[in-house]
Length: 553
Image (cartoon, rainbow, N blue to C red; front, side):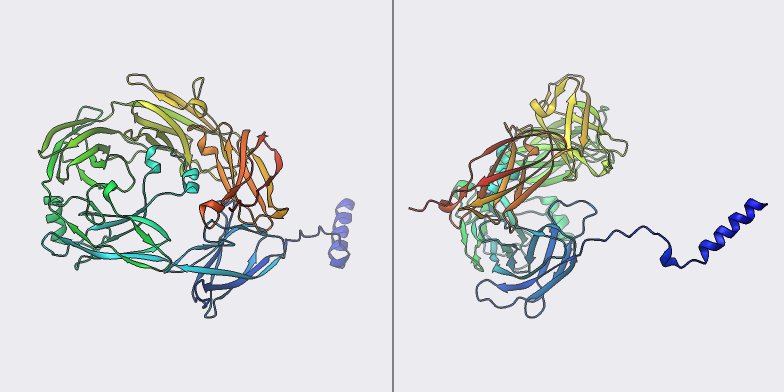
């Protein structure tokens, strides 16, 4: 009883004390936010551009990362407040103009903006360059306008774009789509938002509409007849080697008119057999050869008997692909090369499930959480005529590669946050990151073990030229030696306004690091001497790179 009275008295004493006299843990003070302000103007005459979108995007972005953005007012001014300290990609965009990166001179991707706690960055100036346009008409040989013709503006990838691609097949070196449009009922088209440069223009009588709202009986008739016109390149030739390029200057509206001629198209028919020996519910599509990323798409589903018929196929070389309709994380497929001439092709039979199946599991070898169901895996073939394979990972980390054809494949994981890396990929004792996955017909497959980790290394550094920080230099880190099997571990970063750069989540190993800076013309591009560095888990290393001044005759 006495102890209860003492306890109650002590509680009453504490409640009646001045709160200021009680000891309390001080609250952690949050770093002061930053403010960034400036103007967006027309690079040609300096006139302000209203309603431009200006954004700060975290350089090492995570799913929970926030983008800080605003729009410019009538005087072209903008202010972005309450931005946490950090490193950001900084850009301005506006319809009719080419996107502008911070500190970009038009020949490179610009610089990263590094913000310290409480910093105010004022007077940033974005000078937007007018985008170019290609417009024109498409008529048939009788001078009649052709509607729903697909127009594709193509350009060759830059050296920097080639470096950043994981796919090093010849397909990745081909022309790449830079813009698309479709002709209206007057046969007119307009491809907009193009950068300065040389373009090849292709016209395809494609009955698959770009715009879903285009409906009606005309599409049904076109689908039933198939294409009656061969794809052409400007100014109306069928071979890419005979095409004329269109050179665009800033803000230019170039004219490229086409005349398409009728051809004798053929029909391709056959059936698809499933892995169970029964007619398969599958999608059939043709891919032009040599393989590109902008080819004609002839797509059609099999019927209840597993049969298909494609109409209006132009002469040429193709790969015919069958992809099984499935709700699973992966599906069966089959491919066959065909040569289309002047005669119909029938009795084609594609058998699904004749490749090799591989099961697998992804394990997390670190503290932290990975949303495995948001990731998917690829087996990338070096052979342009080989489809490869893909698989989506389930929540429990399991996956399946189904029907993998013969060949050697590089492994790739997509969707992994930048702070994480693929630690290992093994099939039994075989290291797939060292020599790839070799698949032979008739073998029994196996189980692929993938390990991911966030215990990677960090590499920071600086780039100088003439003892001054180099702003917006492009720093490339690649495995040493770099192969088609470890190429996905290569990274690129840009220096900030102080000439600094940073990489996170690097896999342990030996690397080669080099800095480059693009000039207004190729002759003025410069680079540093490459440096080698070895990294282990949890390493935090720094490196300095020096770029020599451009040599001008």
